[in-house]
Amino acid sequence: MNSKIYSSPKNLPPKCLTLAQTFQNLLDSGQNSDVVFKINDQDIRAHKLIVSTRAPKLGAMLKESPSTEDYIQITDCKPEDFKCFLTFLYTDDCCISSANVEQLTDIAIKWDVKPLIRKCMTFMENQIDVPSILRYATIGYGHRNEYNLYQKCVNMLPDLLPDINFIVNNGSKWVPISYELLLDIVQNCNYIDGLEETLFYKILHWAKKECEHRKLSVTAHNIRLALGNITEYINYNLLSPETLATVVYKYQFLSSELLLECFCKLAIEEEANIQGSITAAV
Image 1 (cartoon, rainbow, N blue to C red):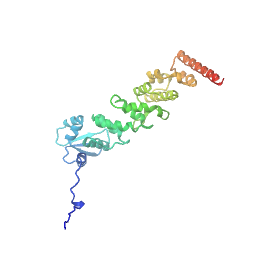
Image 2: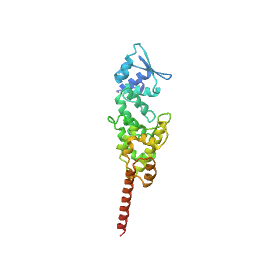
Image 3: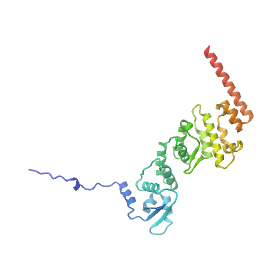
Image 4: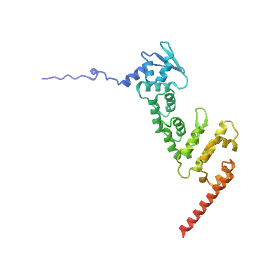
């Protein structure tokens, strides 16, 4: 009678780790490390060869230190975010969340790690909402020729416009978005019908906050100064008569001649609508 010998699970050979898992273990253990990144009171051990290969700009900084084991002080990010950055260098992947994506993007941009920048940009593209849209637009604006994040923010802005203002939280306080960003948004955003009035008041709110940010009095002159060329891209013909007669007139966004022209166009349109209603009734 033939007997079969079965191997018990404990006799099975150990499962082989993937390359990514092996490198993750190397980072976590710090075995044979030759550089230490000091962030606040935390030390993160790493390996120059891996770091320099994956992030040449960071590697160039490491070369400036001649000692056998270097201590590099990092002051512009949190330890967990820099460890996440290193994880990407070691494994070509890392855990990105809404809580760390902006900081991780900053680190990746600083050290010019384009695959991580792309990964962060893609994550943000899929997470655009009311609280994040202007922060993400600010990030994307500086890289609008390379990635789609900014254009996606612009495309979604009309739907979210009623619930946002053109200010962002910089970590300690709310500040206006940059003039350049707002100008580009006003120039290029295709707003849905009926939102020109909403956009106008959002722009005016931004101008008042910009005056406060610059420590200027909120006067008509300073508001026009803050807005600069932005006023040229406002479609005044779509504003209500009340807004034209009060706000536009008060802050002198238009000359008397142009303001009168807007009222004339509104009157002509109103007359046409009345005649159309009469014709339809007959």
